[in-house]
Amino acid sequence: MASEFLVAHNSGPFFSLNDKEFKRASNKYPDLNNDSNITYETQTASATMNIGGNNYFDNETILKQFERLFQLLYFKVDYKDHDFVCLVDNARTHTAAEYSVNDFSMKPVTIECYDDDGESKDLLKLAEELNLHIPQNCKLFELKEVVSEHAAFKNVSKLEKLGVKYGVKIIFAPKFHCETNPIEGFWCHSKQFIRKNTDQTFQALVSLMEEAKENFTERDIHSKLFRRFWRTIKAYSEGKDYLE
Image (cartoon, rainbow, N blue to C red; front, side):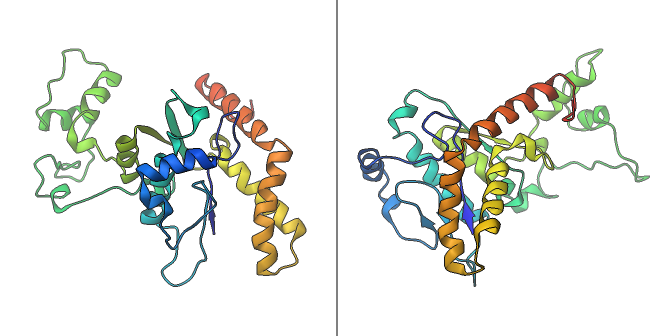
C-alpha cells in the first residue's frame, strides 16, 4: 500500500528534500532517521507499507506520515516564506477526532437536539438553551456564525490539531467529489499504468509503482489535474455544476 503527496509548486509534482536540506531537517528532528513499519522514500514523506498482521494505514500511521511531512516542509529552500495548506480527502483515517468521557453526557456543553416528542429542535431553540446572546432580527447566516463558535459545535480532528502545531492549514475535500482533489487523479493514473504493464507478480507491482510516478511526471499530468481543480472551484463558487 502506498501513500503519497502532490505539490502544487514548480518543484513538484512530488515533495522531496536534497541532501543538504534533509541533513538540516534531521538535525532538528532526529526521529526522521528512525526505522518504522512504514517505508519512506529517501528524503521524502512518500510512504509504502507491506499490508499484513497489524500493518495498515490507519489514523495513527497517517498522522506519523503527515508529521514527517510537516517537519520536512520548512527545510525546503524553494518553499521559503511560503504558507502551507494541505488538501486532504475526507476519509476516516484523516478526519478522526479525539474524544473523552467529557465529550458525552457529563460535559456541560452537551445538548439534546430533540424535544420530548422526538422532533428536531431548530437552531434558534438550541442557541437559547446554550444561553447564547442572539441579536434582535438576527438573520440565519448570522445565527449560524454565533452558534458555530460554541464549544458544543466544535470537533477538531487530530490531523487539524497536528497541522496547528506545525503551522500547516488542513482543508478536507468534500466527500464524493474527486474533481476537487488532484491526488485522486494520480491514483487513477497509477492504477491504469500498472494494470496495463503488469505481469501479475508482486515484484512487477513494486517496480511499476515507481515507473507510474515517473510516467506521471514526464507527461505533466499533474498540471492538468491542478488546472481542473481550480476551474472546478471557480465554477462551484459561481453556482455552476461540474458539467457546466
